[in-house]
Amino acid sequence: MTGDSDTNNQFVERREHPRAVVKIEIEFKYTIDFVTSYMLNISKGGLFIKTYETLPLNTIVFLRFTLPGDTKPIETAGKVVWCNAREEKGYFPRGMGIKFLKLNSADAEKIKKFVDEHLAQIQARSFL
Image 1 (spheres, rainbow, N blue to C red):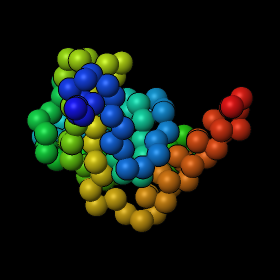
Image 2 (cartoon, rainbow, N blue to C red):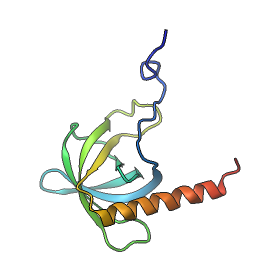
Image 3 (cartoon, rainbow, N blue to C red):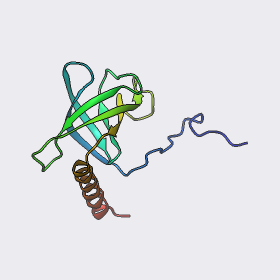
């Protein structure tokens, strides 16, 4: 008998793109005011925002953040595709997974380059 690994409380990796683990300040807005928080990881497909007040799935948000070493902020829309409202999903903190929408090609390339460089640094320091 085969079981779904989610029901066996095992973490299942569903990410399409490699991620950089980071702590970068981010602003997001879904009504009138921006809320400032931190993103904990980023990929060319999206990011994770640490927040105690998560939004409903499929909520559209406006994002604004600046990658380390850059001066021009990235501004784009995103959609809430995953939430952890109660720190119930293993080790992951409270927050929201956001999928990028309408990310322009220059910003997508900046994010890809940032993630690739981050992963290369980790691999260069790995003992395995």
